[in-house]
Image (spheres, rainbow, N blue to C red):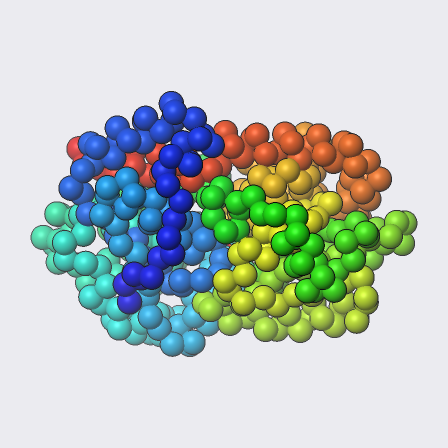
Length: 413
Ligand code: UDP
């Protein structure tokens, strides 16, 4: 499936106003150098999760720059996504991947055999789901194209000692690519493939992140029965154990014993994540019909509502126990909110403890930090303001585009 229904996007001039002329000139120069290069992005879901979020903005931005870029999404049945979820968990250090799952993985790769376009010059494959597509390219195609594997996962040390192990298969596949891209240097595997570090980014002009009127924010609170007068603590995340929504509820209950407040858990179901139904059930059981806990299960296109809920919040939480990068942290910071987040994965790249938020590891610590911010709104506002400028400097779409085009430019030489 080629995604052609990309929504209208803002003008490049608007981005330039946000990040400044200097950075923009550099991007235009790179785009000029790459003129005529055809780019293809491939991932496994159109909606839900950080990768879809990035591609939704990145692809139209490149097209607006005059670089022909397409976005293709793998198609596969639910059993494949069961397998890739287990694989994803395996890469983040959890056991459970069995060799019998290998056949399901390859069946889906075969179903999508023709997905890499013949005339694409640079193809970026995102995450392990479509990684195996490289196997269907001929030697000539492999030589003519430039293939990049973009890994968004917090990659733990992948065991590759055992012959025939899944770790070994991954390694063998990745080594067929011309280069790999990771979100942080911590995840670089010692594999024989040139690697680049490019942190993810958010689009400041997307529906998720652009400024929205106060009456829309108020209307969203009313719609979900959230009291605008009571402090709001929010976590936005897929319902996934690594996002620890149950831990967030436990932390919140401790805070609420000391000060009145509400918790909003905003989540949805990424269509490539079959486990989320189980997690959502556990979340609802832990929330126990508590009127101060709002557990929302939103459709995948709820960007403006999520925007409104983040803006209405006093504190944003992202209590992950594993996190590739954590775009929800970036989104919270960009909206001028202090963020209390797990000291894991890519989160410390965004939060300097005590400066623009707090890094936490336990339920008690999370509760203490939230309480502190709710009791000190001026300090919270100062932290939020710093966070916004930090994101402007490092984690907005134009910087991500500049980094990617730099890698593509190097691959051409
Ligand atoms: N998101 C969303 N709806 C949801 C949950 C998450 O639109 O119900 C978005 C969220 O705003 C963020 C992205 O999905 O832009 C999640 O990216 P992140 O890097 O935080 O985590 P991932 O889901 O990729 O592990």
